[in-house]
Length: 73
Image 1: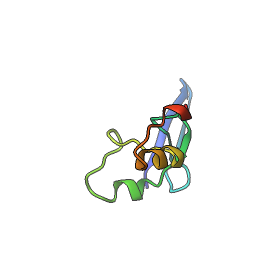
Image 2: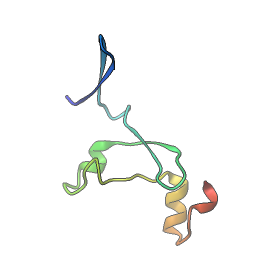
Image 3: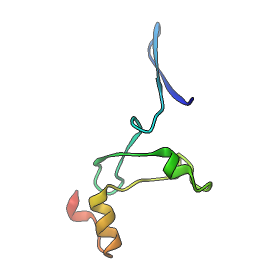
């Protein structure tokens, strides 16, 4: 089991199990919150958590169409 641990203050901390339902990032193009399945992202054996960015579906469509996502900001 993987989990995230954060100290809230000097006397209290919190740990949360990492699942396929509680991992999110922000689209690097527009900033929209995107739910991420890390097993799917890291399953290729080449990706890593620090060097990977996930675009939202709207920006992904625009990128695939050869456009830019500037107007989505």
